Image 1 (cartoon, one colour):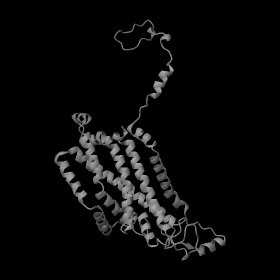
Image 2 (cartoon, helix red, strand yellow):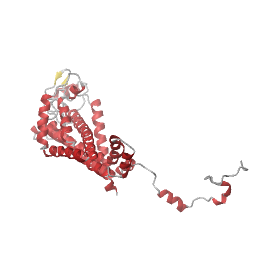
Image 3 (cartoon, helix red, strand yellow):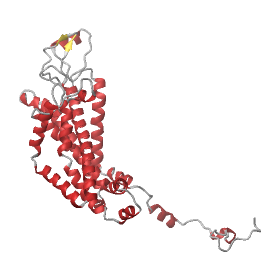
Image 4 (cartoon, helix red, strand yellow):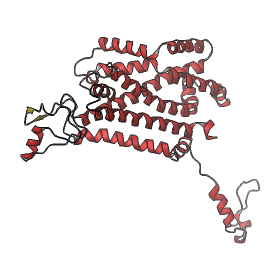
Length: 357
């Protein structure tokens, strides 16, 4: 092997020309310079690292995780149902009406004195002798479910509509944006109430189906959010695409024959990721607040299914006698909406390229 001659045109390094003395260990200063160099990362990882440096955002994530864990675990521990009227040994307990937190009725106290066991009423009971804690838990489930699913519907519709409008441009963009302007000009709350009332009367599902178990009120809420609240998302994504589609890499993709759908999916939407994440995070508390408002005025989730808004509306009648009944659902709404808003602000600070500079 040593007798083989190296080709003069070869790019391989001839190690025989170097001696060991030519290679010396790196100095401490050179090592420190290497430590200063940041490791390669992705846009998402860098944004998440900045997000977890924000104490308000981290606190919001902890609060939301605690709430979600509670609404999942609590129904497994508490032996009551959200629609169950309290009874002792098969007899209806009429004295368990409007109990204070961690108190028992006379019938329950007698049962405990006789050696029986009774799970405490953490938030007391309501006017129909139902455990109030489990009703607040299920109301939180409903409000969070409406918020998350409505935001997903808004994201899908707004992303598709805004992508097509921004990428196509011209007359297509003009017509599509005029439709958005018409929807924007409608009074939101009036249209929501009208659609909700009409859909509740018109929607009918086969007994035993998934939609029937979900309920017409929940399905109509999703349709209402999907009909009205996607316009803001569509406008934001359209504005981003109008800027991004003028870049050179979009022109290069067009020149090699890439289809518009692939260009939007592979090149444009990933560059709109920050706007999509931030808008979706801020849409969730808006949907929760709207659902709570509709339930508060009596056209939201129908009884006996509880919602935080309907629980607050029911507690309003006995506000002077039982003020704590309004505190629990109102406090839960405040915690959820405040945590999601703070998380959305943290996501904006972490993922918005303008703010990151």
